[in-house]
Amino acid sequence: MTDSSQPRHPEAPKGRPTPKRSVAQSQRRSVANTTMSRKEAAKRQREERRAALERQRQALASGDERYLPARDKGPVRRFARDFVDSRFHIAEWFLPMAVVILVLSMVQVAQLQNIALLLWLVVIVMIVLDSVVTGFRLKKTLAERFPDENRRGAVAYALMRTLQMRRLRLPKPQVKRGERP
Image (tube, rainbow, N blue to C red; front, side):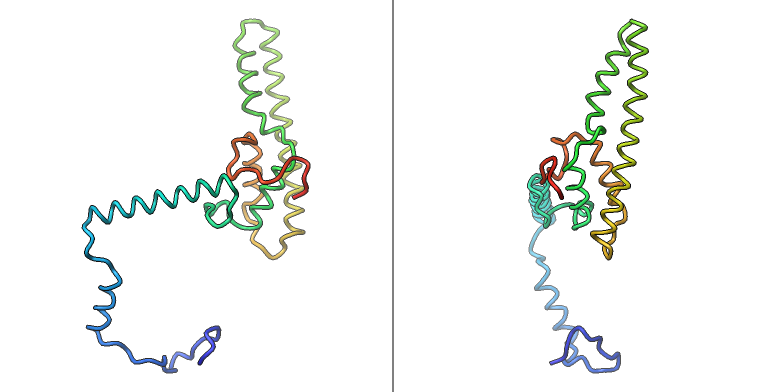
């Protein structure tokens, strides 16, 4: 028996005879289920897709690594998610703050409109500073913990996650605030 991890020499025999064309074709036909009509095949494909999407939805809710979409898979992405979810970020409150600031700017009082403008500036500066600090910390921690893994895009992935409100994040947070990832 040969070891499959070693590459076979190109001129070495493969160890079995080449099947006749008729045998190979009949084997292919038996594998492919040709008795299905086009409608049945489309229906089966829809059901398989629906089942796969349901598994993926449940995985996003539970954090099951096997069925997550490709963008969320892997230990680096999991660590980036846990890193973000274990801390408070100003960016996750951007949408509620934006609504409040918008309401203040709609009021026909000059003082309130000036306050709303100042609040916009303060909120944006705070989000940018928080994102820069989080990005540097995460990049440093990823380099220490995963020196041999592909870390490309993990920081951007984490920063985009900070912009979502915690309860709306998918995959659902698996760590509590204050926990170390």
